[in-house]
Length: 303
Image (cartoon, rainbow, N blue to C red; front, side):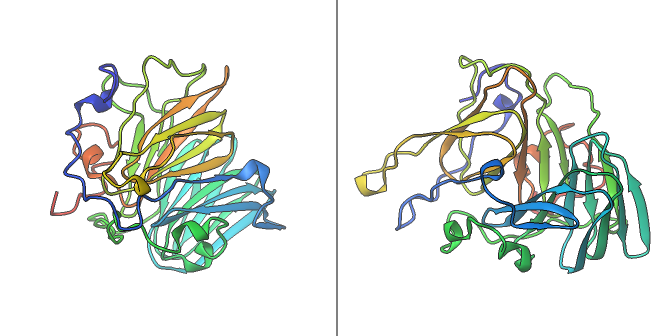
């Protein structure tokens, strides 16, 4: 269903559908940070929260000298620094690393801290094992009943040389045949999509679906419309109306399987979207050259 110019046209088709859950298909979840008050507003800054079935996204407008700490963090988490002007000093265990902005950083389990000397945007990604952060999410009701189409979360292998702070810069040249700028760790895959500076061409959209995982689309800059459609079944009680959901920035859209979806950038100006998957996607990982840090993080043996 991809346009021939889309690199994803070379992906293998999705597998066999699992069928319709007894309660019908799960709806999407939208959290528009720009129109809701922050979950936390204190000396470190203003932080908004949103979640999917397996993960939590936090978006912080950090103040000068902010210090964001995690104690007894159960697994690896991700730091996104969208702006080149935002520097973070990351400490994890005995390791301390100054991370320039415009980067994705993977942070080990255990105790850690992120210091932001000068105010800036900070995004962090955690699995749902961070129960204290799950409790802060305003869309928790959407996951009161887990979506049975999504398997229980299982982390991917740790790096052969062990967990450590790993920074990957986003200043990556666009390459024909590669889709976005993809980085994976043991818990997340982050696809920092190539920016768009014009509204998307509506004759070259990419409607597609996933059988068994959610897609989290994080809007950092610009405006987007998320178009969703669900398959019809013999039982009309399972049918859902099409959706064309407008989301400005910053916002999170969590797109459930098996909805057919595509997203349209709207602004004449910067439109920056980041797609997040928890755990990493196997199909993207199998594409040679797509995952830019593939040498650091092995795939599961089942791959």
